[in-house]
Amino acid sequence: MNRTPLVAGNWKMNGLPDSAAELHKMIGALKGGGHCDVLVCPPFPLIATFVHDSVDSGIGIGAQDCHFAEAGAHTGDVSAALLAAVGASAVILGHSERRADHGEGDALVKAKAEAALAAGLMPVICVGETEAQRDSGDAEATVLAQLDGSLPDSAGVVVAYEPVWAIGTGRVPENSDIAAMHHAIRQAVVGRYGDAGRAIRLLYGGSVKPGNAKEIFAIEDVDGGLIGGASLKADDFLAIVAAA
Ligand code: PGA
Image 1: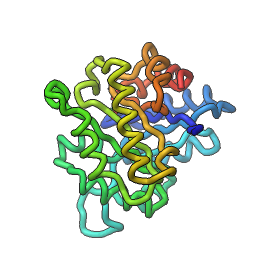
Image 2: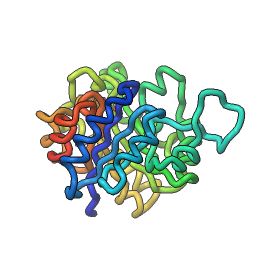
Image 3: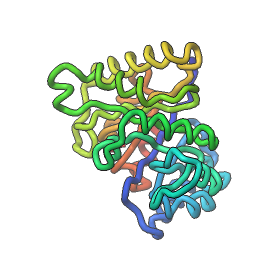
Image 4: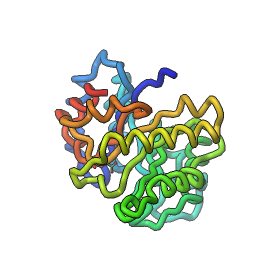
């Protein structure tokens, strides 16, 4: 199954309006590229201008969260419909920082994914074990349970495997551990969606850098990456895109 790789940048709570300079650098370098899909997910207030700036560039702009409801009395939240209306094409859901900071559980992530799909956004659903769960041999069971609870009813999603202990730490699992987890996730999505599960892109995330991206992306069933820290600087991000 040929899957177009995806490299997605998760800017988290970083960036100010002048960070558009990094986006412009990425746009300039990727013009006419197209060997893989590229997504940049800045904080909410930057989305609309980033969409405007990246028209026809081949770079998609995404969000880092959305609400599950279409609209209503949810102070501080943003709907999937609004994100789509301002031109976002995707939304990261269930990131471990949201699971930890905001107590988001699998059922909520699933409801958000359904809302995203209904609005025409591509959900990037994040799963991953803590260090304690890996040390006790529960990594795979944890990830598969998160997936089971977080995946929406239809297959139009991307899944990002992000071990919590690898995020922002400079530590990365052994290649064989990434391979084993991605194999297990592939089996799970095929079990759930049938053949459509073979088309789902499985990203690895957690301390992907220019120096390790090529090796990680070469692992079977790794279809690209979700990149945090290294997505903030155009040079690093572009090197990772080139590795995909
Ligand atoms: P990192 O973050 O690349 O800085 O480790 C990845 C993520 O949280 O998506």
